[in-house]
Amino acid sequence: MKYLGLTAVAGMAVFAHLVPLVKVDAAAMAETGGASQTLSLLPGMPPVIDPNDIYSETRSGKMSPVVKNFPTRVYVPNSGSNSVFVIDPATYKIIDRFAVGREPQHVIPSWDLKKLWVAQDLGDQLTLIDPATGKKGETIHVDDPYNMYYTPDGKFAVIMAEREHRLDFRDAQTMKVVKRVPIQCNGVNHLDYSADGRYFIATCEFSGELLKVDVAQQKVIGKLKLTPTGMPQDCRVSPDGKVFYVANMEANGVHLIDGDAFKQISFLPTGNGTHGLYPSRDGKYLYVSNRGQEVSGRGGSITLIDFATRKIKTTWMIPGGGSPDMGGVSADGKTLWLSGRYHSVVYVFDTSNGSVLAKIPVGKSPHGLCYYPQPGRYSLGHTGNYR
Image (tube, rainbow, N blue to C red):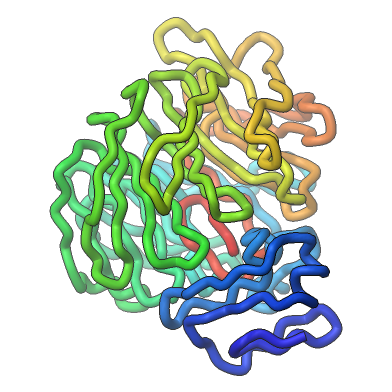
């Protein structure tokens, strides 16, 4: 079968050249079990193999050749103790630790999968980790990197400059500023992209709003007030690209947003302190971390939303409570790793039944941990949003 700019041979994608249009014909429709559709892609973006499942290339076993020799590690930024711990997931043991600047928030894989960056917003810097060795590298100055993403074409890093009320587009290789985009909302922090890569939706936690941003123009093209307002956090798009799921920490649930129309569809209550969102390795479910409330200590659960029905499948409670925050799914999909924000631990969940396999003591206020490497052709940033 053939796509524009893409030839598939024995199930392996060979990228001849990248063009901004991918069309699924009748044969492709039969293979994917979905309707024929055409995506007009952001120029330079890698082809979408299956428009009915944009996570098709993040299945177990689909590791990029770039990461084939990287050791599997879990990198934990401890926001309260200005450090990064390194865990061997095979043994649950901490094998390294190193100091970084003020308030490290997330460990972020680069678009080309060759680097990891530790974003330190109060320290105004990024620190490199070499994923081939797991060791700390250079540190560079970057204004207010609370979080960082990459445009789907790999050209730009998008800095979520929460304190500065900006989105900063930087050259993905040199990290030099290309364009600063002032925004009229408070607490911009997370985002995800449409299936065609032409726009992203970003969350503003302190004003209860969403922004819609045109990627090519690097311009805000819409703003949406959420109902209930609350504090929107993580944002992930569904496998079919039709719905954006937005975690709301104060409203204790997840908003469903029609990205193209930029309107709210519904709201699903999940649990106290709804925060992180992670697709399961098979693409059937969205893991939702409910990290509880810092003062009362209540909460501590994972809710599974069924992508097909857009309904809650089940909820896993943490015995004795907990504060599951940010993290990622193991490469084989068998475990879910999340930082315990208020308990100074990392939780390891068995994805077959939700049981807690381990609680690994780490530093103070662990936040955006990164399980690396994972399957996927490229990274869109955060703790590992792959396509």
